[in-house]
Amino acid sequence: MIRAVAVAMLATVLSAQEAEPVKPVRLPAPTVGSFSLDKALKERVSTRELGGPALDVKVISQLLWSAQGENRPNKRTVPSARAKYPLELYVVVVKSDTLAEGVYKYSPKDHSIMKVKDGGPDTILGPIKGMQPWIPKAPAVFIFSGVASRLGDGPAASDYTFWESGAAVQSLLLQVTANGLGATVASGVDLEAVRAAAGMGEDEKVSVLVPVGKPSKK
Ligand SMILES: Cc1cc2nc3c(=O)[nH]c(=O)nc-3n(C[C@H](O)[C@H](O)[C@H](O)COP(=O)(O)O)c2cc1C
Figure 1 (tube, rainbow, N blue to C red):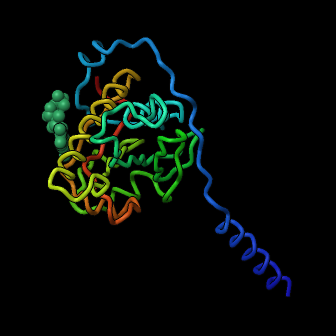
Figure 2 (cartoon, protein in one colour; figure 1 turned 180 degrees about the horizontal axis):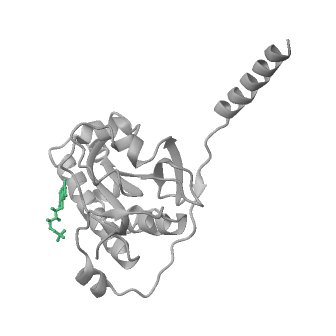
C-alpha cells in the first residue's frame, strides 16, 4: 500500500516536471567594449583544440548578439537580403553555473534563448557518423541554419542564405577572438544529421557549425 502511494506520488511529480513549460532565458544586454577590430582581425585563427570551462551566459550573449543580434529596432548586426532574415542560430552547451546543458535557439527580437532539446555537444553531436572528433569536445557549438524560402522561391534564395551565414560567422569569429576564446568553422560533417539531432525544423538547412572554447594551445 505504502509502496503504491509512493509510486503514485512519484508519477505525479514526474508528470508535473514534464508538463512544466520551457521558459525563454533572457540574456544580459550586450556590451560594447574596447577590443579593437584591427586586433581581432589580426588574431583570428582556426583553433580545434577547444576545452572547458563552460561558457558563461554573458559570453554566450555577446557571441549570439554579434552573429545575429539586433543593433537597432528590427535590424541586425549582419546584413540580410531584403531584410528577410532567413538565418536561425542555435548553440549547444555543456552545463555552466549560469546555464543548463542543452540545445538553445536564439531569438534576436528579445535577445533571449529557448531550450529546444536536452543534451550537450557530446550527446547531440558525438554519435553522428563521421563527426570530426574535436567538434563535440568544445564546451559550446554554435549551429547556423537557414530557411531559404523566406527569400521566395527564386534561384538566389539559397545563395543569399549561405552568403548571409558567412557574414554572420565572421562576426561571431571576431567576437570569439575579442573574448580570448578559440573557434573553427566546420561544415565537413553530415549537416542533415546535425539538423535532425539538434531538433531543428525540416524546412531548415544547416550551413556550418562553429565550436567555441578555450584554446588548449595558443
Ligand atoms: C565553409 C568552411 C568550411 C570549413 N570546414 C571545416 C571542417 O569541416 N573542418 C575543419 O577542421 N576546418 C574547416 N574549415 C576551416 C578551414 O580549414 C580554415 O579556415 C583554413 O584552414 C584556414 O585557416 P584559418 O582559419 O586559421 O585562417 C572550414 C572553413 C570554411 C570557410
